[in-house]
Image 1: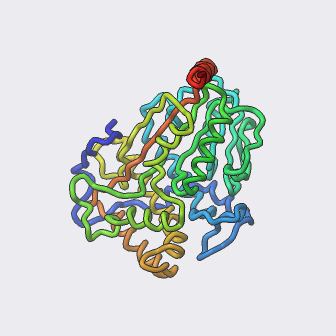
Image 2 (image 1 turned 180 degrees about the vertical axis):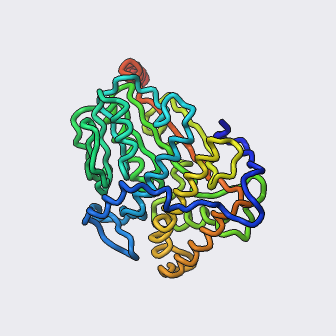
Image 3 (image 1 turned 90 degrees about the vertical axis):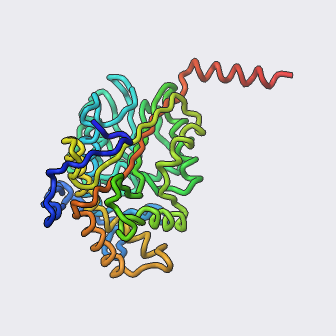
Length: 352
């Protein structure tokens, strides 16, 4: 499937000249996310609920609408990798892992699916806001915690997973997180991270400078950097993971269509879901960053809504063949033998 960085072939039979996408983003939203309305914690700003477990502010909301976006995004990633033996992750963790950690678990979909797949494992999903779940496998646990604080889990992990954590931490926070992940893994254990590039592209020139989407990502990157939490996580995660001491580093790059305009059937379905993901997540992505760090000055709530209405019109335009890049990185903590060999080498180098 052409999910790599080759140009995505457009389906010439997809659209007519007069109509946009014939789909309603609401149709893609799961009824199960209505359980999020029972969660009373958090702070409300501009009609959205944000976490209240940390002293600093995180730009992403934790409310029913955003949980709906998480669920659609989870389905999109599964479709994107449908041709893989395991569409949930790439790390070769074996058939019987014991302990798995999902950082930034969000809606909890990934953790639940992994717990179903590996009944031998205890799968922990951790986030700064409790996921709205009514059922989970008996080997799946959800915890509210700040992963930048000292980790207190006693058992080492075989696998640590992260997805869509862009802009979650300042640079020093990422350094702390990767170090703690390294220390918490069994020798030979794996870490994996999947992140989107927030910028939008087209290979055939159908996304033009006059479109709102053309400068969407660059504007939000500037906002995030003023907030001290850069959205360039997809660019920095590999080197940061290597710097933490991980080896056997792998990386895969994707192009994810926004809308079902691709000829390839799997990319068409992934694009359909990504269109729903964007529509459900747009306000959550934009509201806090623009009302706090918008340019040239912070925007009003009403200005954000007007801007997003224009963006939604462009998203539904079948003549714009836009896509969003994504990166997946997975890497291994050295085995005991490798660690011992490294220690011997360091001692030898320090001898007079």
